[in-house]
Image 1 (cartoon, rainbow, N blue to C red):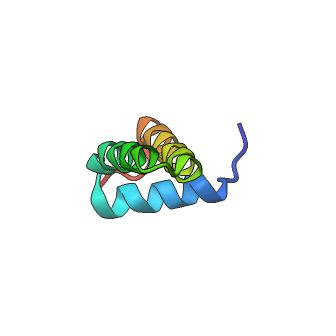
Image 2: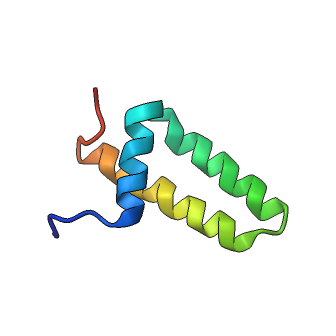
Length: 64
């Protein structure tokens, strides 16, 4: 695994640090709303961030 984080991973880590683990669920809700409103590209981008946030959380990053 690479030691460098992607831009999306950096965004996700910052969000977890600021909001906490609840941000993962909030991102999924935002993605669902974007999808319902017809913004499929936005929904996909938000899901990518949510997935990265979950990955960072599982690796133990972003915890207080």
